[in-house]
Length: 112
Image (cartoon, rainbow, N blue to C red; front, top):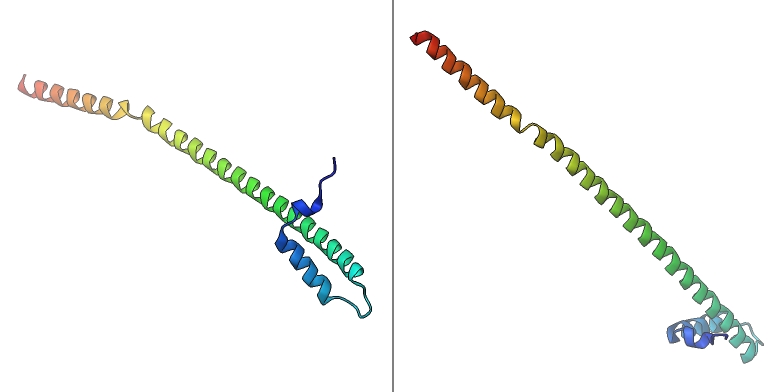
């Protein structure tokens, strides 16, 4: 089943192609020739728009992929930062208890 190109093309594109064809019309050129030229220009415009959309879509995909990658890197960096902090939590308490125990031992030896 072949698609009808006139259904796929906007009226704005048809008008633009016809305007360009009329501007470039040579003396003695028939209306039929001008119409065929307009159709060729119209096809060119449609192909250009399709290519531009595809290029824009690829750029969006690349940008989203880059954003996801940055987000994953940030998340992994956050998890790396959290891990050492959680390992160091008991150390200050151990040092505090040890210092108080030594201080109490010192006081006990002074009074004895």
